[in-house]
Amino acid sequence: MSDLNRRDFLKLSGAAATASAVALSAEGPRGPHSEAAQAGAGFIAGPPIALVRIGMVGVGLQGGSHLENFLKIPGCRITAVCDVRDERTTWASEAIVAAGHPQPAVYSKSARDFERLCETEDLDLVFTATPWEWHVPVMLAAMKSGKHAATEVPAAMTIDDCWALVEAAEKHKRHAVMMENCNYDRPEMMVLNMVQKGALGEVVHAEGGYLHDLREIKFEKKDEGLWRRAWSRQFDGNPYPTHGLGPVANCLDINRGDRFDYLVSMSGPSRGLQDWAREHFPEGAPERSERFTLGDVNTSLIKTARGRTIMVQHGTNLPRPYSRINLVQGTKGMFQGYPNRVYIEGRGQPHQWVEMAAMRDEFDHPLWAAVEARAAGAGHGGMDFIEDHRLIHCLRNGLPTDMNVYDAASLSAVVGLSVDSTAKRSRTVDFPDFTRGRWRTNPRLVISAD
Ligand SMILES: NC(=O)c1ccc[n+]([C@@H]2O[C@H](COP(=O)([O-])OP(=O)(O)OC[C@H]3O[C@@H](n4cnc5c(N)ncnc54)[C@H](O)[C@@H]3O)[C@@H](O)[C@H]2O)c1
Image 1: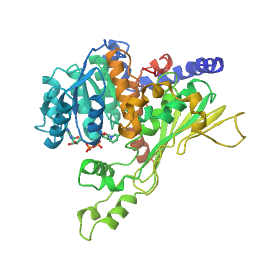
Image 2: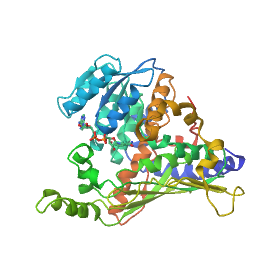
Image 3: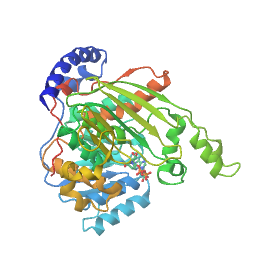
């Protein structure tokens, strides 16, 4: 932290302390007065684990990709797999055996068979890549039976469930990690490195999003088509905020010097899925009579306790090229993704972007340089391998994970809060302080090259 930043931080954290104390006392039985809160200082890390034994719950597209990564990462073994589809547990078992590891235990009797897995198996980590509605039940079952838990994104779809994860992690002293792979993509890690080196000055604003034409995927009769479209029929807000928000939250030291304070959100009309069904299904097909509530574009604005602003967008129902926006604006310059470009005052031409590639030698994150060769060919351009590698590294060394339960809850809280604000004509809604004040003193996140 520069001198200026440190001075500002001390001044602002004093003001925020007053505001935060008021907000905390309004939170009722959850939050600061709960049993877990009284019990101690939150859970950060457990003892080192020499060989991380993993139970995988949900081995579909994304779970299957993580499974293939874990088979290549030293110091871990997948010893149990669970999925409601037998063909996926069979695929997973065969992949594990083909990699030279013992046959895993298989759980596929019912949608709640993960409970038996958690109770029966001797595991260090339960990793879930199930549909959104199952993340919290699996993680709670895992922590209750003494296992660390990791989940695909978002960790939770309601504020109550965010609190449930925090309270379970503290009570059982177990990790509840949200696997936000976009935090590890090369441009996102490069901008984090630029911010932490002070190249952009003080960060005052950021933007992130998940803007991805998923119309065809949502109507498939397999994989995400079996569950993701259903959320678009019953939900309005931002159901998937963390790909864009996770990386910029790290740049703003969220939960480590600043925190999300409040949010406003609004959605536009829902047209894209209806139109797509009309254009792709014959007269009389049931898909043509489905009605959707999810606004095609949802926009939320977040104000942080230190007064900074973040825009988060979601749009998965309209024709458009992919973007997570990835914009970080500081007092000395800015970074913007899609395409990746940088502007630093005093370098290059005034008012002109410089391509990110031209600054890579100077600002590439050391983790990418260290792990790039091993990540080649892995899911989503290698970032998924890097996040899995980091998770296992932290567990094996008894280190805090890069994403802790407070981050998982804060980032996922945008789901519930955006629904709330959207339904109330975009009224302001407050974020709970899941850290119960520790955001003021938590050290900045440093992702090492290990
Ligand atoms: N981080 C990323 O880039 C990324 C990419 C894709 C998906 N995801 C996330 O991964 C998760 C899974 O998505 P996907 O694309 O792999 O979907 P998918 O439908 O391909 O896989 C989900 C799997 O979970 C299984 N399943 C469903 N209910 C279950 C239960 N109760 N117990 C055990 N297994 C169950 C399904 O049979 C399926 O095999 C979602 O949370 C999604 O948001 C993340």
